[in-house]
Amino acid sequence: MIIVLKLSNISAYLSYSVSVITFLFGSIIVSGMAFQYVPAQLRITFGVVLMLWGIYRFVSTRVQSRRRNECEEEE
Image 1 (tube, rainbow, N blue to C red):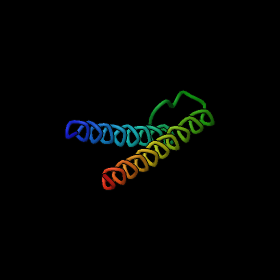
Image 2: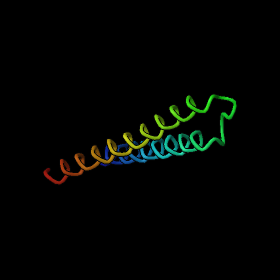
Image 3: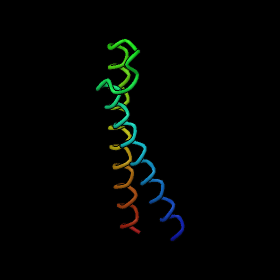
Image 4: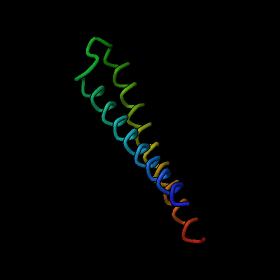
């Protein structure tokens, strides 16, 4: 049981990290610091999609963590 809890915490930390990295990379693309040779409309669209995906991943990870904590409290 203890091992499962530690693995779930590692999974949550990894998911949070991926969401932050995705959001930051999207921000870098939108700002124009990367891929300057790509047309601006395509670069901005791709960057915004990455930013939204990072936000979605963060929120979904947060919801899963709360559900997991509620289930542990009930037991």
